[in-house]
Image (tube, rainbow, N blue to C red):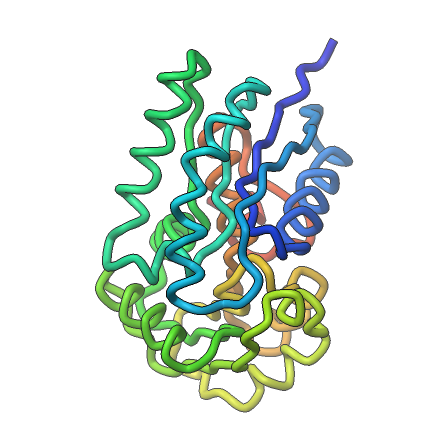
Length: 250
């Protein structure tokens, strides 16, 4: 009998996209590879994407990690990029280490990936240095995200803040609007496009379109998180239709 891997997700209470796009990718993978997946979530309260609310939410991630380890999940994904990046440069390393320690203390040692750390690592995997970034956040939070990415050694040559403060509205943003937003940016001399620096802003349906339109690899927080989860599970990092990072080339 083929093993079903249990995917744990630490999710902001108002997030609806993490539990849509990551299962969609891993379900699509089941069409071409034998592994099977089930999906399990624990929620942290958050309604508005504001620094104070994000910090309070991050404090709940410890409880979520313990709850998911009760279910003996095989890997955990922390599904809020901006919450991690708003806590200060390099914080994804501290968060991943701390939450992994909670699973071990609960007798269910499992790796933890954050969408923030996954995006940073995913850019390295595809060899990107110069990038453009699209984010749904208000400008001050987007500036924090851009600073965080730059501190990790990437040149963010241009960025767009869509300025959507309500997290439910971020999840309702129509992904078909993203190609036109990217078309307004100068992508000629960049190595990659971060189409969604947020696991709550939907982007999966238009990744292939934006790659075809620009001739550049496209990465998103959700794609990078899926790649990181597959790596931690020692599985082949391939998902059809999810862009360069999950093409099987890496």
